[in-house]
Image (cartoon, rainbow, N blue to C red; front, side, top):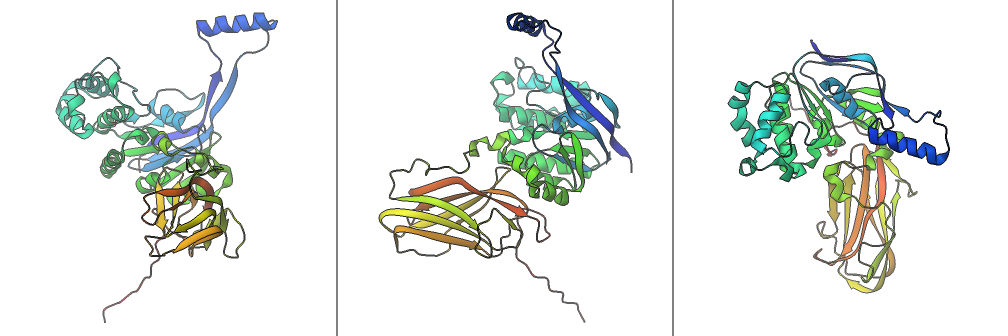
Length: 417
């Protein structure tokens, strides 16, 4: 197989500190006011990558994952030629198309139409190629109505649509995609993933940086895990993602969501119900219990897990409904359950008590999952109590599987005689 990308013992060092005229004047004033003689070194350095080595063969789709600030975006910028390694070398064989930052390669005062030509030329497309593919680019972006509008009036999602449409139609040998797809809506994200699969089928090498682990698992057979600028794992995506999600050192960072799920952010372990303090019932505590009834924060795929919802009702509440949500660190909601949906009718609650919802076995795959719980009226229209991200369960590797969840199943072979 032909190697498309080779990283050999790459270090990338960034210098912290301003070199601009404004920064120099500011530094001089600070030294004068502080009484320092200026001999103290003002600049510091940080290593974005440390001895990073890997090879990617032509036609591979490779995910790059890890906490924020570990060198994922720097890796793609080195491959794209946007920056150079401090030491070591990066060897690239083929035409590179990259979507690394929103608005990169666009001029805000130019229209969408003009920016298609500009951006396509920047990534190496000829005038003839742009003309031939222009209609397909516009159709893919679904921005026909806004084509003659200056892009400075575009939303972040519209930037993403236009940028990806151009990058995906450049017939690249190597396609680099950073987390920018997160700002697109769900339908467009699916469209982009399908386009990347099409490119992969015709031999395009893909490197995909994302915090959305299920998307990485679905698109990439192989994944590289970075930590502190180093390659700490490189192998089949399911194995590397399980390592990342199951290791506390890494998984504690999964709580930092991407831009696309920012609307779902809320404080873990809220002390009060969300805006429902005057309602007739309060959720006082939510506990996780293992198979022996002991309090826990972890379980393995296939284990028994009980979520205990303790409540205090201020009077008699007739026919309440208990609800529970499991949210992944990628912003996706993996499961929602309700006593009403399950046909579990509760005539009334009064005073203190608790509701246990037991998952035996728990079929979520390895990862960290935030839990919401709520108590509502029988039809789930009015929420009496609602605790968001009130607890978190860390699911370890157990049953071997891939996808989003593990489904109970049986195999039966019936050979013909």
